[in-house]
Image (cartoon, rainbow, N blue to C red; front, side, top):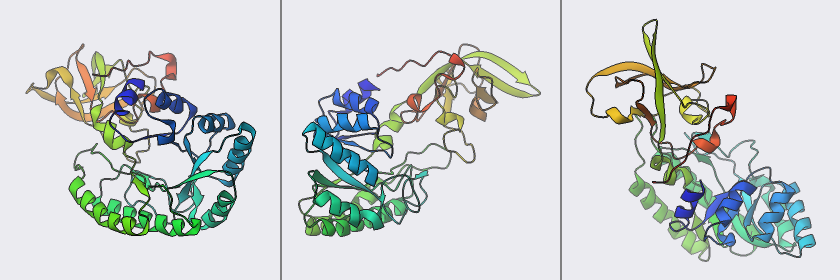
Length: 338
């Protein structure tokens, strides 16, 4: 959402993008191109050309991508800004989505890094450092602490291969937010204290290197809500269904179809009946012709009527743009920054 990105440009140190579309939104802010990184395993030649001309730091994810960057840099008369995305031989345990460890489409395997770094060293490139992103949506403090420690250790070892200190070491993110019953918010002081300890080693071995943390979901996830209106109320064989004018085509993640193995309800409320004491067990569904269009499954909710508002909390990340908005050609949602 451009308005959100414009707002965040005043609050963060940089952006990470994964497409030409995101690149355009990021560049249409006060954020300098050199403080924007470009990740993703399938960057098109046209996207790489735009990134080079806009001075973005491109996270190299394959030998083919490196060759393309070199060819484009030569033809454009530009010295591309690059970093190396590394797929380590470890993962972020207990993460919602594992982005590293084993065979992955992301980055270059750690054991192949030496060969690729040798090419970079003899090429006309401005090499910034390393990007090591192990996983996302993690609420386990010890898992995050372990991943950060191993990532920094790997970054230090890789830096020794370059013969010079990198300017940046991106250790990824992975900080999750609580979505489901029983989940607890992260204890940031515990993570911060451990990270400060790790930074002592970085300052000793890589005093000229800036450590970067990516916190996309953690920053915006809890800041967004999704609102739809109840347009019908029906009872089918004893089960109450609240039918709304929204659904999975607006919020795929809340429907449970965006990576959940076992579906669990997002935090959902009836927005205009927060103080109501009369409750009922009800399911909230959308207007689509599929049983997958389910925003709440048998939840204990205030008794809702037609015209009431169903509100899905924790919707600031992976909502609108991660959803099949054209499915069945229903109207798209409206985004508002408040």
